[in-house]
Length: 138
Image (cartoon, rainbow, N blue to C red; front, top):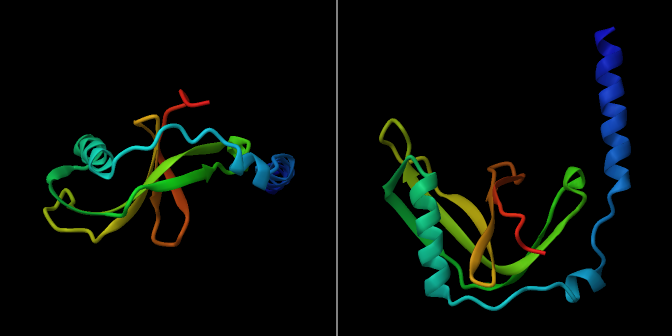
């Protein structure tokens, strides 16, 4: 009986992933990216965000990329939603609860009209973990 439930759930999940189509190149090219944000301003907003997200924000060591136009496409369970804006890549190394540095973690931060709208953590195995998602951007 338990195996039936597992197979049923897997079948439904597989069927749902086929329903959501990725945005086309036209959708990406014509998306509303908003107004650009200066690198210093994006870095300031990123450190403010990490100040409330990290366990020990005062120990954090940051490395930032330059801000470039970018986008994020959600997974099939998010209907492949496109979030367009200006992206900052941040590498953050901070202390954990035990007081030791955990190693740098890469984040992608998307700004739209000067507001931080999405933060995605790049997990060690390459998968994405959504940390912040503000649905106020259309």
